[in-house]
Image 1 (cartoon, rainbow, N blue to C red):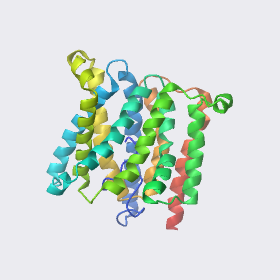
Image 2: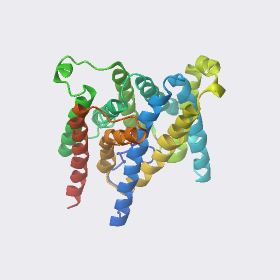
Image 3: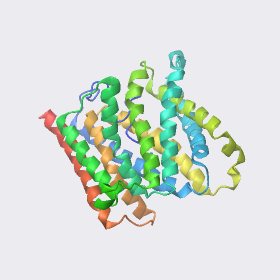
Image 4: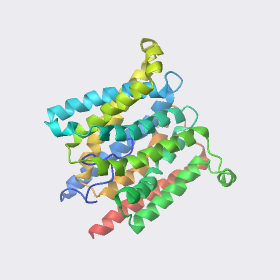
Length: 323
């Protein structure tokens, strides 16, 4: 589920090297950027209920090893077609394994967490990523967050906590977090570190090939880690839903979202791209209703509303900068 906005020229969504769009854009192009990020939010959100459906059938690490391999093959094909497979891409391969380790850890914890946590609650944990990324961005590459962006992140964080603790102040006071949310939170820490570390380790390689190399390294890491489960799993006997989820997460939630973010970051300021992270919990609710899984408890809806307010604040922030 980019599962959170990844990056232009191999940087996570919401970040550009200058913090601004790569080129001036016409109003029509800006609209296309917003439409693209709405699609991004819906695609990422779909990963949560879909991943929850396959938890009982296959080990998360084994499933993601296959998913990374499929995504890597697709991305190499696109990179080759775009003429981005160059010799310099294969220099210092240790960088890809360092980045892929964080990326793989994030996805494994996501699938593992969804065995016990509700998709909306997990999506709320996901909205903590901008705050975590801001911290690591300052520590690793000295990125500074604007005051309004910090306010938006704070409001989004409060909304996320409201959903995570299911609107129960007593549970918040006792800091009672479900096991699934705890597992996934550690994965989100890894994902937040991934973005600024990617900025530091990238040496200007073509974006598609760079991403394909990271996915390949992830497939190798998970293939070695989950080798016993991969061998013992009766893949032919798995229900079709498992294969549909593998294809969805590999091609849509990985490949297509990467292309969407690259498209949007050429048309929107970086804060606007990041803002759509906060729309994911609302989109998860729409997915659950569409899949007949029912909506969340009414008590968590105020927290979802706060994440939407964060989105609006970030969008207004960038509009204010242009006026």
